[in-house]
Amino acid sequence: MRLTLGFLAMAALAACSPAIPDSGATVDSGSGVGFKDDTTYQREKAAREAALAGEALPPSGAVSSEPLDATGGATAAARDPEVAGIAAEARAALDAAGSEADPVQASPSNPPPAVVNGVGISRENSFDAVGSERSIEEDAARIARNRAQYEVIQPEAIGARPGDVGPNIVDYALATKHPVGTQIYDRGGIGAIGAAGRHERNCAGYASPDLAQLDFLGKGGPERDRMALDPDGDGYACGWNPAPFRRAVAN
Image 1 (cartoon, rainbow, N blue to C red):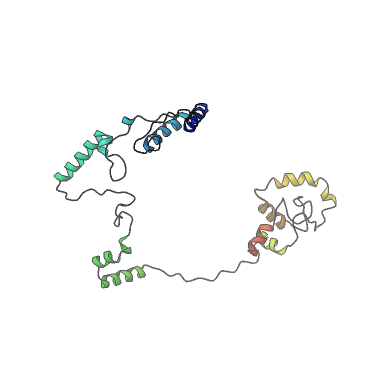
Image 2 (spheres, rainbow, N blue to C red):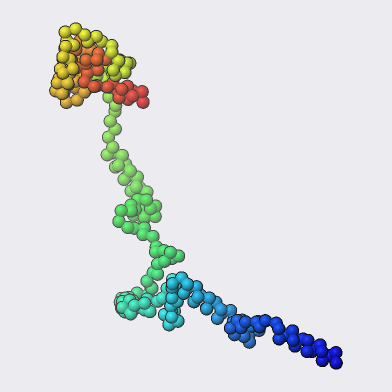
């Protein structure tokens, strides 16, 4: 009686428990864990991720079954029949010419041989090449002929510069120390009247400030300035600057 009541109680509890939803998984007899095998799972996972990314997997027939060559790609004949025909013609030409050596298959791991006798490479740098072409005596005679062609020119003393050659802007630049714009000489008096206009007009007549400074020094400058080339009295005419000459000596 007790056994019957216990069985009935267990049956009632089983009837009240919620049903486990069907996961839809196919039982795999090989794995024994109630899930699909790993190969099928990985294939379906890849298809699902590709669909989510908006990409479609290529069909199974899209992957070529042609063998790969030594570089890891499909063979030339498999890629293009025309390439295979050209290769066959080249090999036939080599066989007809009696060549027993196969063409060099150049690659990063098998680079082509270095060219040692190309145009522009001197054979004089190769001891073996020179030794096979001439003897030591011939080399000595060649060196003697080359030495005979050299002409050694002895240095000569620099001639003295004549004393009266006119003003020299280099000497003047090195003899002065004050910068441009520093008034040293008085430019007042009658000559100062209209000096600005005369300065612009007269300076425009020189091709360069160096020529203006030479003419300025040759006509009494820097003390006198009859042509208003130096209205500010710094001793430098028409914007001439002695700084480059000073820097050249300093360096």
